[in-house]
Image (cartoon, rainbow, N blue to C red; front, side, top):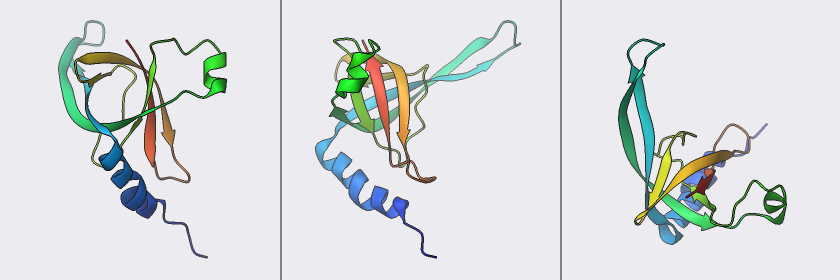
Length: 120
């Protein structure tokens, strides 16, 4: 039985579209803490260059009251980029946003891209 090659679609359709229509951003993830569990010392933040594309929130997403007026939704590349973290921040231009939620778009086992909901 043949299987569908989602990696091929991601690599040859999704990623080129993000490269052409997306914009550069910086994803900053918290570093690995050190020290004892009862008094951890924050690790050095890790900064990644990522490619994102602005997306609109759906009507259903907006209805629940979880989306504020200045919130942004980004479609973020997966190839070569880290998995986003809820404790991270996204910087685009001179504006830094806190990551609010992360939704992988993954038919089967392949993550095609990430939806990253961010807030000022």
